[in-house]
Image (cartoon, rainbow, N blue to C red; front, side, top):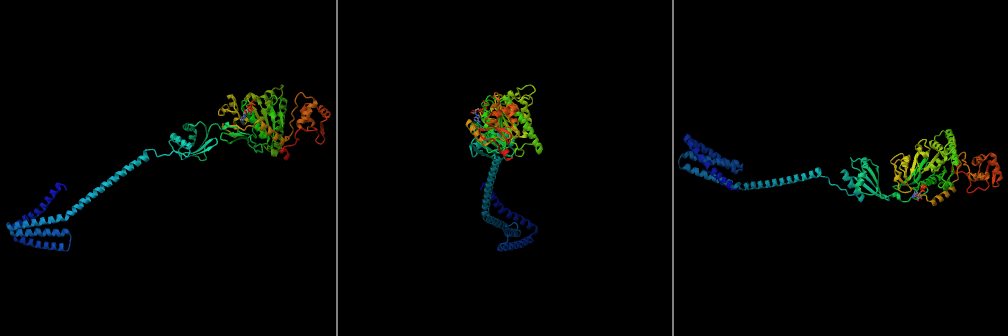
Length: 600
Ligand SMILES: Nc1ncnc2c1ncn2[C@@H]1O[C@H](COP(=O)(O)OP(=O)(O)OP(=O)(O)O)[C@@H](O)[C@H]1O
């Protein structure tokens, strides 16, 4: 305990010992002088009363305050009684000494009794202070923790985990986070034969269109050599990114026969970059096939011819004006007919116009607007022109007043589709000149296909758009396609029809399919330079049974010349029933009708 506490206690001891007894002495002497012995008697009575209260209180354990208060009062009154009786004499001094001694005793007893209380109080005080310190420490700790928490959640970046299940997923998560400061809720990556596909779940607030628009930045961040294809996912918050390793269109795509059954079925041409089938609807569309030499234009033409030839409701015609008809003569067995010179081409296009008119009448009668082979009884017609430029060059060279071939082509392009008559025009030099310069034919050529084209202007002419760039096609067989069902400039690879495949497919289809009659038969004129009999034999060999009128059309002879030629040839006989002429021994397969005509 501190020194000043100690001296303060002794001062208190001294005061409680001497002050009360001295004060009582003073007061009692004053009372004596004032009231004499009467006061002393009263003080004695009071002392006795107070003493009795004191005794009663101590013996009955009343409150300490009452017991000790009564004791103090008895002592003071006793001293006062003695002093008042004695006055300024020795008993007063004795009484003072006795009272002081009693006060000292009482003080010592009090101190003894309260000594433990002091310790307890001191201890309690210490305990309280320790508890207070502990509480204060806990409070400070909590404050520090709160501070740290606020820092962690409020000001600093939340803890993020950009690790994906695959290296691609991790890379995408990291790049997206770096660019947009956002974490992807999902980024599932699935590998395919040609690369991988990632389905990105975007966090709210990150617009899929924006991500698609800005994908070049993501791609740059991924630093991959291949190509991306972006699309929106099934959910509005999803983006699907397809990545292509290397060039998936570099591989050869083999020819496969398809199970198409009607000319309205899509025609399979090849594959897209993701290995999906690339097909196109040729029904009720005219088609342009363009491309520079040696990049696969003939291959696509051949492929389309094989596909169409396999259809039971379709007949094919061909026009190949290059010397020797190098492309289409290979397909002769699956062609209903093939025009190889200007006269034949004119005859064919003239016949197509007549056929169209007849079909118009049939449609009108049926109250229909579109040709349907099943209900209108004649097959869909496709005319494949290999090198349109050559057809126009030779076919437009006509005498004054006669119709140019380009005019016929143009008119068929404008009108024939609804009648199930289609043109497939292949050319190396697509330009207005090739189409006869009069009108722009492209509006009627709704399917446009192009392999590589070295001339940029040609590419622009074919697709009427700068987005389709055939000059970018870097290998034979790759092509671009624009049609009602293809409005994106995607690259495709055509199935390859090798010479062996073409030969065997043509033989198979030519054997199975017998050309169906299409209304009034197309009779092409025989080649120049044949005598009358040779012309007749040539046409009969070509068309089987022929009426005299057909023989006239096919040979350019008169009625009588035809009759004489037929009668002079031993191997030509007359069928009385049908009133037609034929060769006694027909070469190859018997003529007949194809499925459509047969079922009518
Ligand atoms: N789909 C294809 N896949 C792979 N190679 C092909 C494909 N198409 C064509 N080729 C290759 O390109 C060569 C030229 O093809 P094709 O004869 O069809 O071209 P073209 O453009 O018609 O040439 P041309 O006009 O000189 O006849 C073929 O011999 C073949 O080697």
